[in-house]
Image 1 (tube, rainbow, N blue to C red):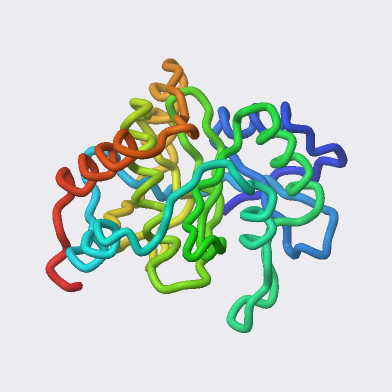
Image 2: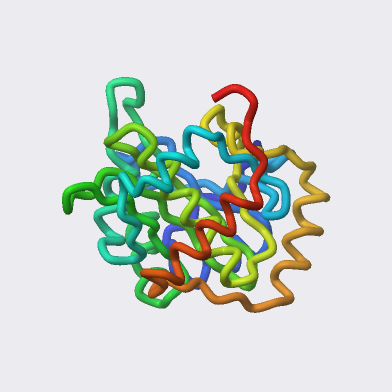
Length: 228
């Protein structure tokens, strides 16, 4: 991981230029105002043509334990992703990043995928859509499988919008269960360059039968993991 500079003005326009160049911002702590740019030597991506969804998760999605919504409470999702937890004393989403990302949402570039249960927000994720690339930023979960269900619905929306690249930044244990892989920086930049040549649409208004059909397409196209 390499760092470059500490911008004093983290504007949404600067963020978009950074994502297009293959770098992204982080901070040492949510309590600090400084931001550094991250340019990893290897990058995590979730191939949109080769992912895995476990049999147990497929059952959870099909039973409808959670209701998926898009962009209805973006700031709340962002703030829950930035919350500390007993196993995570610091998070990287500080005030400058928060302000810039909220502005990107207002401009139509940043989106949230939300899992609701009994009319309560219990999980979700947010990311940035640019060209036909989606940069997954962070997720949270207050119920078992809530964030995983949100990721399944993200895949459905990305397929519906003909996205070509899902950037996860890093490979975590959580994401590896979906088939996230690590690619070199050069490989990633090549994929990103291709994805930015096309314009996809993030369908945040999809619902009802159309959403269920898109989700079922994702579930049917996935290979189930042997160990559930």
